[in-house]
Image (cartoon, rainbow over all chains, first blue to last red; front, side, top):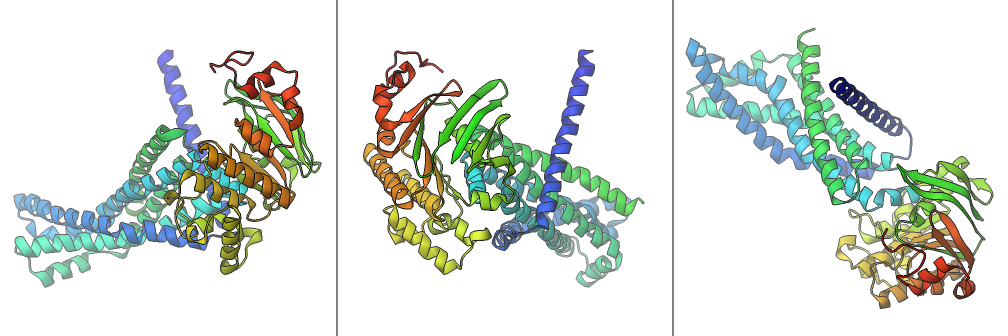
Length: 257
Length: 249
């Protein structure tokens, strides 16, 4: 009975958490369409989430693309299929690795930063100060960040896809003896529009999840340094798991239905 | 002007407010004293709607604060100096002071808002060169002054001060106390101040209320506090370890 009770409590806890996040997201959406708007906060969020994430996204993508080319070449050699390197690198990067790795890097870099910043603001009464200055924290802190991440992460994914493919190209043409023009031609010929739209759509969903989790955990932080630490850790864990779960669902939607 | 009637608030098993009754007249300075953790800050936050009480009513000019309609207009009547100043780390000092003047219903052109901010900084004894610095670059006393400048920037009719001198040296505490008294007198604002500091009480207060056990234990004019026939008040204002207030909380 105790075991069943524990399962019940855990299930109720998870459902309650999903409900709270859902309500938080709903509130963010309603504030998105109601003035006042904060364009300066939105522009700053675009800068922090988009522009300043480019180095980490680029480095992640280029190494992943290179490693992918080496693996496919080595694996393909077992059944004389080395020539599929350009096609598999392209499809692997654009459909899966590009969006997922960029999503996870954004969860590590942006979600943690948003959660720590907002949690610290809460602990130091800056959120209360916002309210007393007639500024709704949801409009001022959450909406600009979630909107910016939803719009800019697809662009980061696109950049990551291109750099990842370039990583594979550099390894394939530099060390595996592939012809440069043929590699590019094979890549372009093999990719379909659906591959690219799925990649960008995943980017938008992952960006939204990453920023939303940062804001949600930050706003619901406990007291003191420990509260900030827990909020930051929880936000990254939740964002990473939700991104991977959403990736599974979106892959099903785009490629199995 | 501000009336709290039978206000209750709990956090789990911790019943912080157990029926607070308090009235603050327009244009007067009410100081709330009491030990740490007795709910003084919570009482003030219930007026602003930052904390929602479970029971009781709070009115400002006879209007229930939960039925204010236009919340922005309601909050625009208030200014608040937070205990740790609560300045926005990411904004320079002048934008902190002019925060309300840069956005929302009280928004003004940027240059004008900056001028007001610099004037308010001068009023609290800070020079214009502080305006472009970030809050983290200022000392605790300077941060309190910036917080004070922000609280008065939009010339509110009601101002709350949450432990304005905590963490400051005695001289800086004296400076802040004098500033609050001067500003409140010249603005004619209604104020509520939370403090443990009896020097602050005697400098700032017209009236004093002591909060203990979740209720207002004693209230009266500051001139009467030394003659108050209440052992709790007597122990608190003299800082005695012995008395009815438990020293281990």
